[in-house]
Amino acid sequence: MTDYLPPTTDVVFIDTLRLSANIGYDCWGRRRAQPIELTVYLHLKNSYLQAASQSDNVLDSIHYGHLSKAISTLAKSKSENGDPGFDGIDGLIGEVAQEALKLAGNAADEVRVVVDIPKLILLAGGFAVDYTIPHPSYPLSSPGAKKVYVKELILPVIIGVNPPERESKQRVITSITFYERKGLGGIEPVDYQKIVCDLTKELEASSYMTLEKFVMHVVRSGCLSSDVIEAVTARAQKPSALSFAHSSGVEITRARSVFLV
Image 1 (cartoon, rainbow, N blue to C red):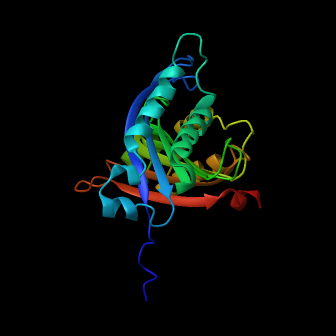
Image 2: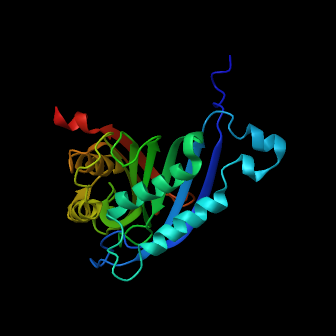
């Protein structure tokens, strides 16, 4: 039995290409260029890289240097005077995917683009969008898998069962993953900045005995915040709960349908 073994894969990627791009409003509500980090994975046809591995010639592969230059040139062209920039984060991903698929041609099965915007949400450690687009997919309207990450949102919360915990707020570090429904190209994008802002206000105004209740509140609110969101995973940690551990935590994943019954 070999079912436990990973499938054969051939991937060319660029990891954490740092750029400046106008993708809409920043954390202060101003529309201007902001720092982003791009990671692009070109998933190639099965055994495509076999030729390059035997010839040891980059011409038999997809040149990641050319891909990096194409993306950097694209971002620079969108930052020139008079250019309004990209049509949001999805617009950036769509144009980067087009560049990647144009370079790879028929060698590509799909392209995965991950955009990190470190300073988009003030209280969070990071914000990222992870979109996998099958080939061919120009424009960004075919079904594709999309996940959105809010990383390490730090909130002061009344949480715990012990008397001191009922009097003073503790830091709770929360990370949230939103899973969007496939095949929704062309619709109005979800305003995750507003979702996180509204959720933060809800959580800070509430109190909890357990992390389980806290995390389920996050999951439920996230699932019901938009019809586009199909499921949510929330992970919360209490750094001060255990003396000799980094943190204690709870992670819960639920589909939106659970809360519509």
